[in-house]
Length: 95
Image (tube, rainbow, N blue to C red):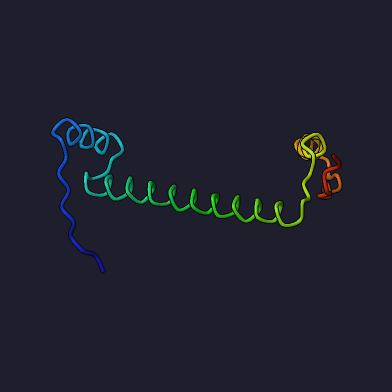
């Protein structure tokens, strides 16, 4: 089901959108819908990243365990080189 929403666009933006839609071979309407959809997806993805970061930080605070950057960097560099190194293990930081 679709509904109608009215938005007011400055003339300059309306012209830019019309021009961009024409270059893309789309109607202005479909171009605007696609742009809004992409923006909503980006914000949903960002919210997911934020939730994941919060959950990981909560776990770090609760356990006191982390992976030292030097170990994680070695792991990531090996993965980029096509190797399959063992995953680093989180451990409590020694003071």
